View 1 (cartoon, one colour):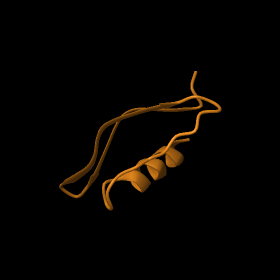
View 2 (spheres, helix red, strand yellow):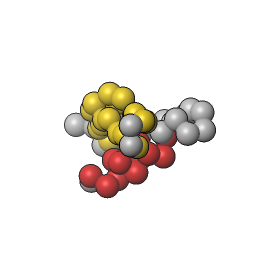
View 3 (cartoon, one colour):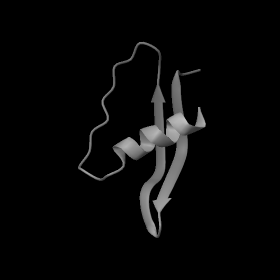
Length: 53
């Protein structure tokens, strides 16, 4: 089982879809980066994950 596992995450702000069917699988010891434009949902994805775990 991976240390960080996200499957089919969707997130909306009002009528705007910020995250759509996001999948992430990180194993212990892996080094990963989360890249994207300003406002594309990087922080939202992490906050959503931390809120549920």
